[in-house]
Image 1: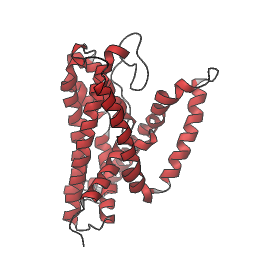
Image 2 (image 1 turned 180 degrees about the vertical axis):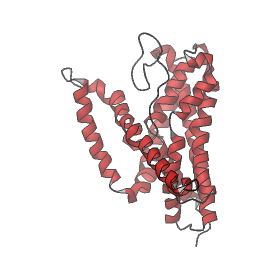
Image 3 (image 1 turned 90 degrees about the horizontal axis):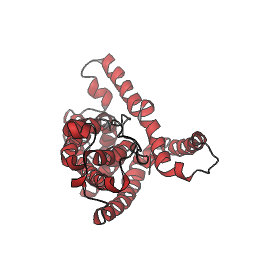
Image 4 (image 1 turned 30 degrees about the horizontal axis):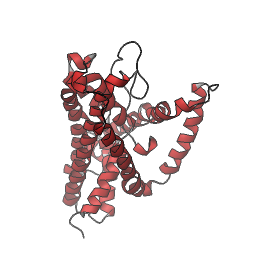
Length: 294
């Protein structure tokens, strides 16, 4: 019986967990935060990291430290009825109520809408894209046993390769100086609190409770079965994942802030510049499989 995961196994599970966390909101929220906060970037980012990284880490840690078998088991410590109510509500929140709509509207808005034929209505294009999108999504969803291989070994490394190539290029050739960018809206009057709200809006704190059982199952797949060892491995992979997310959030926010002088303030997290005035903070749903937007 194994006592702990190897370094390669820990990285694979951390990579898988990152792929589960990193959804549409994780990409658009820090970029928008950077654009809107400008010179207040680091204060806003601190607030974002508290709720966008700290709370998900606590969610993963809670499952590991309590040695729970999943969200139903963890919430069952309150009461049996509450566990079913809370579990159903959480999965609906990070699924069809909020996350799923954003997971296909963000890639459509950022990559597909501009390529539509001039005579095609945007709603028609979105409908066709959503059919294709959910067909692909269904293919992966019906094969949950391969989730660690597909996300942890292939999709996340591919995403990180392309992401860091783009971001390093942007950092080496910045579009502007964020120190000269004036904060707007809530990021001017209350940057820390605005960052806290933006980080919470990723809803990864809730997602962490749902994804914890996947991490626990993956650890057991690698042969670690003792409850205390599973708890330790769960916490370790959660820390690795959240550190990676923090680095990506910081880079994305910085590049977003630098782009403001050249591109203006985006109308939303995925669209073009706003011609009139800065919008309120986006209030969209939570993170999900990043490969749904990759």
